[in-house]
Picture: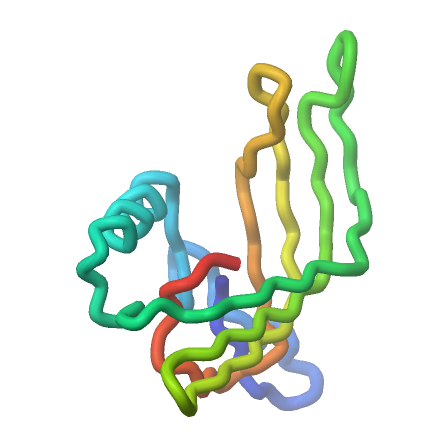
Length: 134
């Protein structure tokens, strides 16, 4: 999930930080995601005490590419828009809006996320943490 910058007209190539080269909100692989899930499941996670109440709304799903195999598609690239609403304790409310591009790969008859790019519409985040998943 790259960070978004406010840039002058004509400098759009600088609008987003670059994967693997600049600081990003997230730049994770499967190992890092696995550790995040394990940490949350311990029940000892200061940023999620008490647990957040979260609603994910995904819309405008479009198929961009399909890689066929002998019997069925083996990989699909899709894009979508999302809205995440989070409420914590008595007064904390966060709303994040953006878009995703996912590459889904079929493994043993089930679809798994091979890659996900998240782009937030906000360039300044007001949230206290990013412990939830997009």
